[in-house]
Image (cartoon, rainbow, N blue to C red; front, side, top):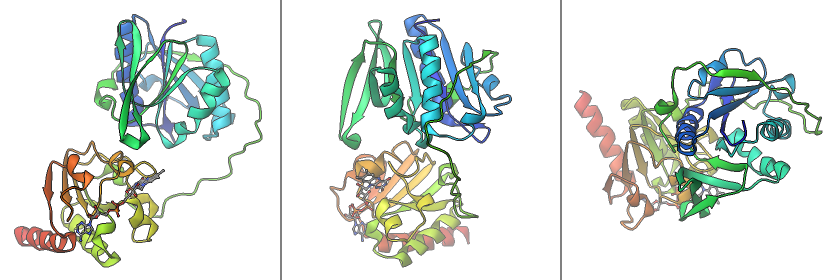
Length: 323
Ligand code: FAD
């Protein structure tokens, strides 16, 4: 039905991502606020039971097609555009993931639709959708009201909790039929992360190192500390660029978004591109020699100290405590 709220579900190799449920929670709030239904669209091939796991939605449009087996942005965008033209939603929430990010330029252009990007929150205010959008990598925010339809919104992780969107329900699943033209862009292969590497998004404790730790030897001390605390080591972009850690350990805008219980940021300045990836950690401890470093504005605790002294001292203290 025209005027509904439509959420794009993000799935990867048969698993729905947390941000899908975050957007379903947000979408439900918006749909209730506008007095319309919440619908979801899921894209891929051999989707099996996945559409039924989107219980927060009233209706799920299922785009199951061999041409959508791999995330080729042109194909996915064409298919989504067709569903949007058929369903005429008021708003489309697209999750800000590495895969969906590629759609965010294409889809509004294909639909000639208004587009609000980097939304941290969206609310219904006086019957209109009002989005809070991050600008300049987090240096500023803008509140924007989107009146035209369909309004496409690129929503960042963390807008709502995933738990809110994990609702048992029995959505009506509709097989959506769309024709997908060959755009000339063909998927070749995946480059898998290094074998045996850890997934930093799943760790409860992260020791994160920045340029301020000075050397790869100090990264090894951080690794030992992480191992003692049952966590993993990660870092800011310069540390990855120096080759001290692999790309899979990068936190931030062009790395991973992490939300551990404990995030120790050692020798990290707190640039917006880094903070974007770790600000929702439960407890953040910063170690930085500069008391004015921006990392202190997101840290819960801090030590204005030399990280090359603090990391070994912490390691000794943890080992002593563990006996
Ligand atoms: P620096 O900015 O050099 O800061 C080092 C800090 O260490 C300083 O605050 C200093 O006071 C402190 N320090 C120095 N010596 C010591 C010591 N002995 N003990 C304790 N503290 C000390 N960055 C990311 O991290 N992740 C991203 O995903 C990312 N994506 C980006 C995407 C784009 C498009 C762009 C333009 C940039 C991106 N960046 C990213 C880079 C980002 O802008 C910063 O340059 C980077 O985060 C800085 O890393 P840093 O804090 O380790 O280094």
